[in-house]
Image (cartoon, rainbow, N blue to C red; front, top):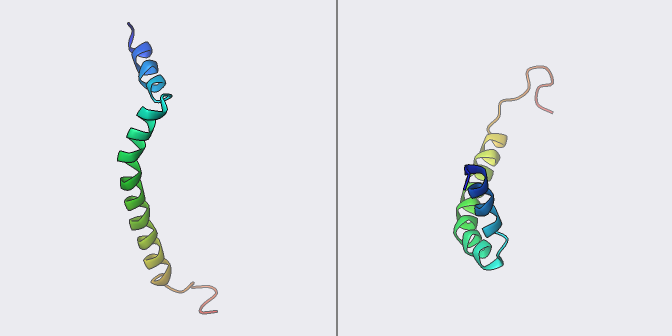
Length: 58
């Protein structure tokens, strides 16, 4: 079996709903935590950004 065929077989395994849900159950909490951290960083940066040098405080 070639390398491409084995990769394709790995992706086709995820077409099985039971296997996909098993993978999603492991991945979703990590992705949610990363998204929450990045959202917090973005909100912090938006409130601490310096004023614009051309427009000033509006």
